[in-house]
Each structure stands twice: as structure tokens, then as C-alpha cells.
Length: 172
Image (cartoon, rainbow, N blue to C red; front, side, top):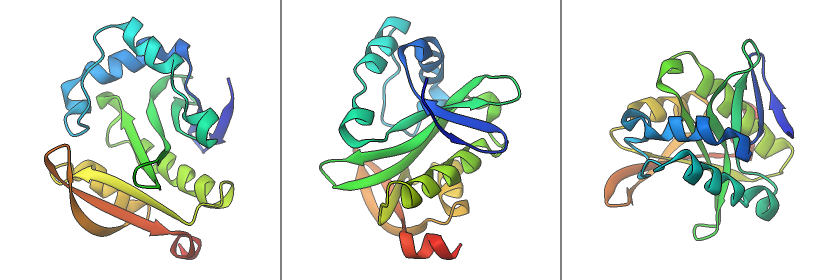
């Protein structure tokens, strides 16, 4: 599979249909999807179908990437960039198994994704969205240098948008 990024502890690579079981297990945990607005997949087959039909890499040249630990070669979640056609913006997102929360994986992978977005993809701006109650994700966005931009509505929930411009990122 195509490796996109590497950090000290992680490899980020394209998601593929072989990730279906891990993807399914990740999304059935109500704590993991609590602030996402997503529903859990009904089966591994549904997760596989989603992955087989995931077109972001072809359409935009980037997307969400599997996060794999170097130490155990273990799928622990995903992180990456996603182009939103309606907003004409690229956002950064991440989702990890609960057992690896608070170990710095979201921050480490998200920093690498920001660097990739600004240096390789030549993006001018990247945003992050989070529901207001999702303090864990908001902390990660702040740690990687994003700043509060505005309140918004996300599927009927109070949310916030954070942002970082290329110029500010290059000064961090």
C-alpha cells in the first residue's frame, strides 16, 4: 500500500479494503464516534464497501490515511486531510481507537498532515472542525497550531471551526 507520511512512531498510508475490519471496529465504539455525526457501520462488509468506494485520493490527490504504529505494525486509527467541495476548504481530521487516546498519536499524525498539506500540496489554509463539547479534538487542533475562527452548526450541533494559514504555519 502507498505510504504517504512517516513520523517517529507512525506510518500514514492510504486506506484500503483490507482495513475494513479495523475500520468497522473503530466506528462501532460510541465514544469514538460520539462527536462525529457519523453512524456506526452495520457490518465489516459495509465498512469494506465504504473503503472500496473511497474516492478522495483520485479526486483530490489526498484524503484520510490509515495510521499504523511502527512498533507493532498496528492500525490505530486514521488521520488526514479532506477537501470539502461545498466549503471549498481542506480540513484536517482524525479518529483513533480509545485504547490509544492520550498517547500523542493524534497530535503527531496531525502535525505531519499539516506539514504535508502546506509543503507538498501547497495548500494556503487548513481548517479543523469539532463539536464544542469535544475538548480532546479541540486541544489537538490547538496543539498543532490552529486558532479559533468561528462558531458554527454541525448537523444541528454547536461546533467550532479552527484554522491555520500557510504563513502562520511556516513560523511555528
